[in-house]
Image 1 (tube, one colour):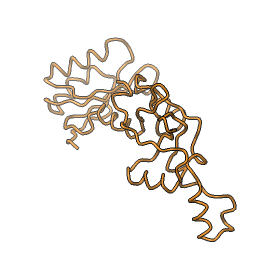
Image 2 (tube, rainbow, N blue to C red; image 1 turned 180 degrees about the horizontal axis):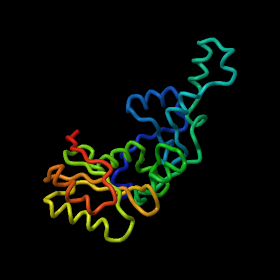
Image 3 (cartoon, helix red, strand yellow; image 1 turned 90 degrees about the vertical axis):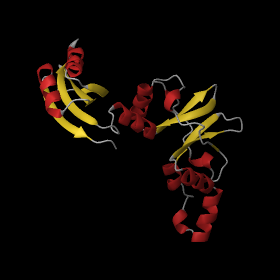
Image 4 (tube, rainbow, N blue to C red; image 1 turned 90 degrees about the horizontal axis):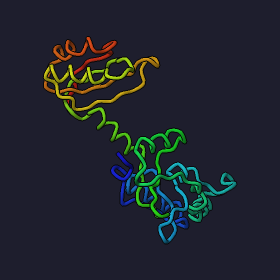
Length: 217
C-alpha cells in the first residue's frame, strides 16, 4: 500500500504571511493539528503545527498589558513560527516507510509533494486507521495471539490448520516475538468457535498467548 492510497487530500494549506490567530482559527474549524505552508504557486515553504501556534509569543511579553499583547500577537505571522526544513514523501512512498520516517523523527505528519507542489498529507491519524484495519479491530471474530517459530513454512502450516477447521481469516499481522527465534502472530478468524480454533492451532504454534471473541466496533 502506498501513501497516495491513504493520504488526506485535498490538503488544507496556508500562506506564510497569514497571522497566527487566523491560522489557529482555521485549524480549529477544520479539526486538524498541522498545515503545510505554501507560497502563491502552491510550493512547499514549511509546516506549522498547533503547538507552534500555541507557543508563539512576542519577546518580553510579561511586561506588556493584555491589549499590547493581543496587538503584538496579531502581528505575528505563520512564517515566524513554522518549521522551514520539512521532511516530505511522495505519492509512491510505501506506507510503512512513511510510518518509519515519522517514528524516527518524532513527527506527526508528512506533506506529500509532487513536482514541488503539495498534493496531500499523511498523518499519524491516517496510520492509526490503517492499523485498525490491519488487525480487523472493527470486525467481529475470534482474535488469537500466538508465538510461532521464525522459520520458513510455519505461517503456512498455521493458516492451513485454521482453514481445515472451517475458519476464515479476516485479519493477520506479524510482530516481533520474545526472541530472535520467534514471531508474534495476531489473527482474527470467523466461522469457527473458540474451542475448535484453539484445538486446531495449538500444535502449530510455540504458545498461544491470548484467545478472545471480539464484537464489531
